[in-house]
Amino acid sequence: MVALSGGLDSSFLLYAAVEAVGAANSYAAIGVSPSLARAEYETAREFCRQIGLARDHLISVATHELDNTDYCCNDSNRCFFCKQELFARLRELAASLAIETICDGTTADDLDDHRPGRRAAEAAGINSPLLEVDLGKEEIRKLAKSFALSIWDKPQSACLASRIPYYSEITVDKLKQIEEAEDFLKSLGFRQLRVRHHGDLARIELPPSDMGKAVGNSVREKVTTRFRELGFLFVTVDIAGFQSGSMNIMLKGGEDGS
Image 1 (cartoon, one colour):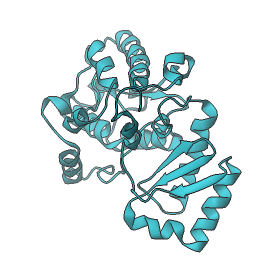
Image 2 (image 1 turned 30 degrees about the vertical axis):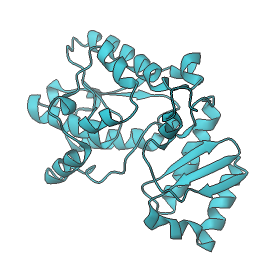
Image 3 (image 1 turned 60 degrees about the horizontal axis):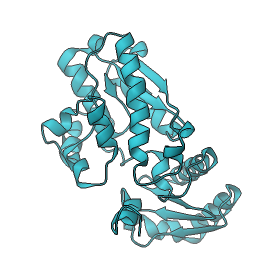
Image 4 (image 1 turned 60 degrees about the vertical axis):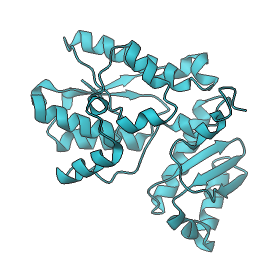
């Protein structure tokens, strides 16, 4: 069983599992909650179809991390509580299907960042094959391209909660706001992006090559209008550009975010 997020790494791992043991012996389980963008869920479903995974071998698992105040308070261990909930649900599912092995898409590059979810994986006995063979994200992308997988150039993705600054409460309303804002930017042709939620202010991260388009009059007016409809009073484009995990900058001075 592969814990599938819809992202490149876990999708590639699922493909490798199907190639290794066959579609009949492979399952994908995707945790579904307000922190997962619907577009990511649909991407995961479509990819499973493309690689020949039976419909009943993609299992949606409802997770309830938002019922946990330790998760919602959003301290530096947020990902631990999210993954703890996910892996507990997957362990129950695996037991019901007599599946012994659960894998996640952790890569060698993930060890270079703040990843409290890794502790939850280790505690739950989750295997990380990509990490075990020391594969990094760029190598995985090249391999996916060599196998002509549709997700080879998929932009980096992460849960919607990662857009909310540490120590700012996670709520369903904020997650929905972020998802709708990012969906709107994608409808305008932007691919790699983040909308960081700072209360009344939305901070948009884009690759430098896309910044000119974002601040052009026609696009700027559309974005401002839509974001204000979603509840943001102020809209900014971060001149530092897109940075995966940029909220972790808050932790550089210590776990208290100073």
